[in-house]
Amino acid sequence: MEGDISIIASGEKWIGYGVRSFSSVIGEILRDAKERLVMTIYVLTDMNVVDGIKKALERGVSVEIFMYCPDTSPHHNEAVDSIMQMSSVYEYLKIHRVENNILHAKVLLSDGRVALVGSANPTFGGMVKNYELGFLVESQKIAHKLITVMRRLKG
Image (cartoon, rainbow, N blue to C red; front, side, top):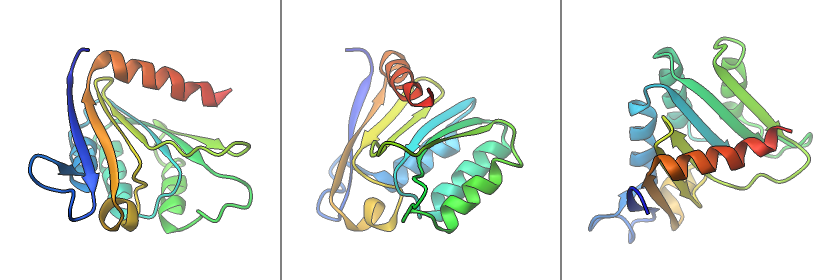
């Protein structure tokens, strides 16, 4: 298989010894994106992630978000409101609301070559408190396949 794979985690006993945290990796991906970010969101409460998305948009990075948003969503909060408001400011922010099915995947893709896939939601629990695992994969082939799968939610 092409590309490098790293284990990413949260939870104090799992971080270190070559295992990086979801929080630091997500921050790095959002900071380093040059052209395009594609992500799925089940629950979002971490305003650092929202700020990272906003800074990427300010740099001219295209952002496409597949967000779980049922009509009676318990996930509606300040972070989600901020993302929705940004969509009226930045024409290259596309939000695809997934309403009829549960979108539980946690994926962040950058520039068609970096993929973070794991169990952590961008929340305090997912980024710090819970024990979550995932993989950071640097592979154009894998990133392209993931984007293809994710875009099937649009129709």
